[in-house]
Length: 433
Ligand code: SF4
Ligand code: SF4
Picture 1: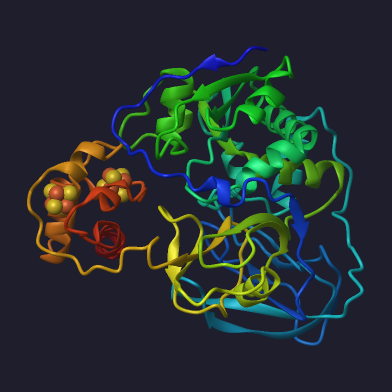
Picture 2: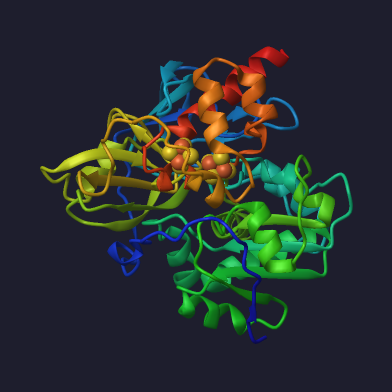
């Protein structure tokens, strides 16, 4: 079906997408490390609970931690071997989490998911999605089984093929190299949701993907303008359908559910290959890495092993980023490990990062002009620094912030607005408790 033109959301920013660095690198499989460290907090919701003990032998794909409640997710061994340790460690964001360490035996003996799936039955598909530990792989890591069970009826599944974060090309490679598998996963998601309409939103800078997905008659492809954050749920829903999700409401309140390309691929693998989510494709890019790649990486792999496979870092390395440059986090060590939602590892040089110290706000208003959520980022910044978190919300709207980073990108004073958003949200959560 010929692609339609999407609507355009005002605000947001136009960035140099830097996709040329890695977009032509075909997916390669990274050889597994000698050990993997699997966090039990790889998703939104309660940490998973270990079901193995130190000394146990496990297979690749075996359940090692069970979901703790409805909004939680299961964790699986990404290699076969021996459980070497279970205990607390700091994760890439500095939070303490429990990790299960597995010593790789080099055998890669595989344990498939148990049971049969009825591919035409919504409940059977939802059960398999939850059983496989699938979470949103676009970054949010929200358990997919919960997302495909909305409380209100929905009529449209929107697939996020925008991949609007600069540098990242892992979804692009899946769309190009695994088109049929991704479409199969999309169809399973459609059946699980019980909807008739599927829209695949793809930015116009990926004409080859648009052409590939146009050839499927049961999908509607919508061409999206290159604008950051086009992949934000509310922005994507508006551009793909014209529907506006009000503040404080969910996509399902306007009849939509959004899933991303890698998530659809994981659903295909869970249903057709009986494979749990224990590995994913991620992008290694940036001007400070010797070889850029799109790699299939086992969950729990240390960044340093990934970087070494990519020829190591260049001398001018200034920052390592987990994820994309807009919504990702700079990390202080290459000892941290990948999680289900790790979409990229960027090695950036001094030209690519701003190491300038913030200067006082000059009230230019540019942050508010670009904010896709129509918030007042300068007020969030001001009141958070003043320790008045309630005003950061009442006057700045911090709880509606999607942490896209557009305000910080545009700010001439280099204010650390997103860091203050994170602080204000955490303080408000504490105050509610
Ligand atoms: S305030 Fe939040 S939503 Fe608005 S531009 Fe900044 S990070 Fe994005
Ligand atoms: S863009 Fe920066 S300097 Fe301008 S109003 Fe916003 S915070 Fe202040």
